[in-house]
Length: 115
Length: 114
Image 1 (cartoon, chains in turn brown, blue):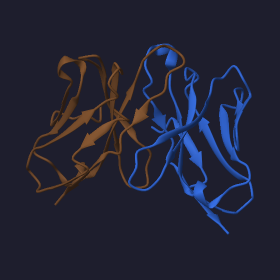
Image 2: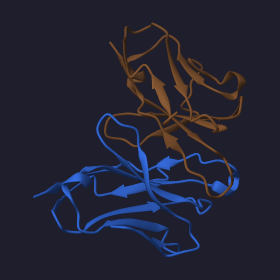
Image 3: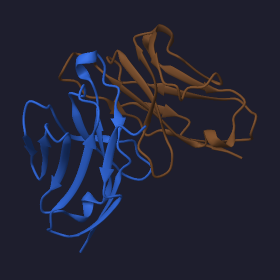
Image 4: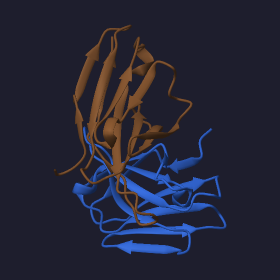
């Protein structure tokens, strides 16, 4: 296990279709984050899990978005009824969560294109 | 509402020169200020980070300067190299709140020319 793994790397979908992305964090990390990054912008926080509990959701996460982390291991992010505005890079990050000396490690992201 | 403002948007520096990127924040509850480096097609990678109890942190060619009263911090890259060409993001979080949720700046595309 050399880092955070995200699949697929690229996804092209038609507007209105549902898509699901997967994130496998670093194995001992208990915290997992989803971010969205559009072209020319910094990543924006979407949601955060500690183990299997979803502790925080951004207002950016509309009702069409849902994230899960069953058993506190991998996580999935599903977007229902995709819209062209959903086109972005979706980044996952994980951390060990050991207090004030912790670092979030990012995966390479899933680039979503809605046509 | 942009809580972390970053400038410049792009920067061109000659090889061997000093690259300087600036950030300003609004939320005084932020207590952790990392800089991330991102290459095309890759996720951001932590470069260096600082807590507000120090005014400067240096790691190799990379230095963060932090001004708590002005709510500003900057990244200095000394002896800039072509391999430093990437997009740099400043960020801030509230580690004391119990997680590393990051608020990012808009990024600076750095190009190092020979």
